[in-house]
Length: 474
Picture 1 (cartoon, rainbow, N blue to C red):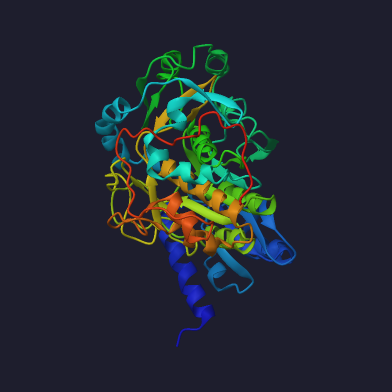
Picture 2: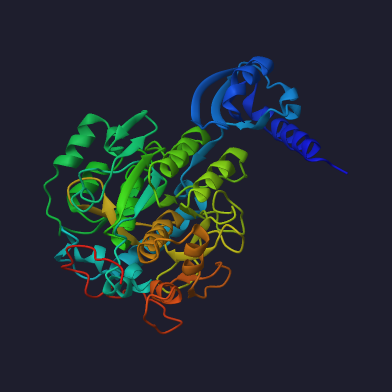
């Protein structure tokens, strides 16, 4: 019979063997051990401590380096809880599966958008097709706002590329975050990733909020830039995923405009990050008051360090929402596949499974619209449309904030149960989310029709323009 120690030894031996060809003669690793043991562990196995990711009185997570092939005896060291390569991560929209679908779907979706006017939305002037768009109609956002649910009192941490802290729609909703790519607290601005000339052009743009609708290629993922002057500035001058964080933040704000948004910049504007910065961001969110964590990224294999960080957040009563990925198949990705994580797939505006989304596995707990979702983009009154599970995920993170405002004593499993009340879409977990059904299922005090479904070109939520503040749950 295999003992726990023997299983651990086999697991870490296989892990090291599988990673050695990629690492050559050395590399950086994530080590979990007791703080009192880290010096001994490094000394015994030829490691050098680079940085502390997180620790408490009993457990510490550290970034370490090895100048040569890692010592195989690490696998049998009972004082080491886990040891793994510091693997690289990327945002899902950089996958090839998404790009082909976007090129085919962009024009059709943009043609369905209603004409724009300026409306007031929770204290900011925004374009009406940000508020009144198909995605908000499909999920029945109006029902939540009719109950004065806005996410008030809830903090949503967004682990992404940062945010434009001066965007008119977002600035009043932001709370201090952290830039892990620069090791500095505060605004976690993704504008710092641009060269000074491009940054100045973007920020100083004075184009009117209602100007034309152009589609521009932004390297490996496509966005529809909804301000004419912006497209000329951006073409060829920005990294692959610049604006991704501002876009995901804008969707959380659209769904839960009364919630506080904590931007955690763990990704650079080219879409790159690593396990080290992701773990730091999760622990930071859990220790600094986040009620919900929204994560629009994926890794293809389970990670002991990532699983431990997710479990730590869950144990602190933080609801965790993650993208199911854009590989277009029955693919398990993490952290979406971990127990009690709400993994989110993408559906079209006609409630079909998006061609790029992953489906049919534990990575997909539920789904939300993820095609042509209008949201904020860096710069003066800039807005964009996004395609991918990255943009479905913050819809569900916002829904979690609404549920937590209504039921502040809920644990992550309770929130997930509410989210699971949706509209059936084949092989998409519990189906496409429906706020009306979710809130009705937790006893908010109203009923709604079942089987609701949005249609392409819907007029969006009613009664939202002109809202100025979030109310309290009844």
